[in-house]
Length: 393
Image: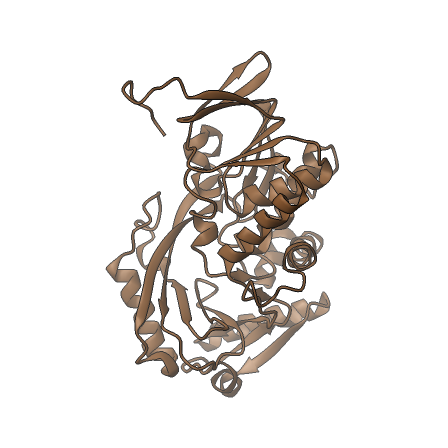
């Protein structure tokens, strides 16, 4: 945010806290949740430009999937067996932590379904890779199932796929309701976290050894600041310019139809994704590969090219929704990291500035545990090398 001379009112009153967290999405609220658990007496300010969940956390597809943006075989090729197992286990822990701490016995309130997810292949080449990946995953004792075209048509109501695999332990959720659930748990625990919505950050300065976070309404002083801004991180600090890249994802949703899908699905090497909600609506997103040059930056507009491709996919592959009315179209800005993995740590030039982000389209499946991991790092506990920002130099 920039502030003109005419708008400058002295940035309002001064507020003193122990920590300021910038960003009101999954990363920010998760960090606040685990920080409050670490020390209930710590005074925390959570600052959000608009309202909680206005960014990608309230605009994604609600997939709580294990692993990362790549199929498991590629993860092993890139990271080796030990590190790939650690990355996969991290996301499994993320889901378990959400179930134990947030979702609990309120699955219906969050539209939570623990039904797994499918990766579908439209060509024999992709199916062969998926089968090889499944075989490799079995060697790691990861619960995965192979499916053929007949299974896909019967269990998913989908046509035009030659086969696929099912990740048995994946889940889906209403992402904004779950985010609100994290906030509710924070507020039930005590008053140590204060939420500052509609407080866009203008600048951060150092004064008397502390940080001063300026918004149009307040100046918040604290010894520590956490950037939980994900795709917007390059806007708040130049450090992220070559580490986290803003990437737009587009989605459309249809009206409710009778339930026919067993679980959520990925297709086209995880670039496209679709699911049917428990309430019957059909959601589909992806196809950013059609306009890679356009699907970057901070505009949250939709485009005719990608929206048309989403519609065509439904018409081609999902007969049950061919006549269903489209009710919503939207987009959101994700943060893609330079190597595909999230990052936590402190700026090498300023140990008072911490950060968590770079979820690469898997924020719901990674952010809750990433917030916990950042708190571990802040309190001197060892974190995995593959998520530590130290790996980036």
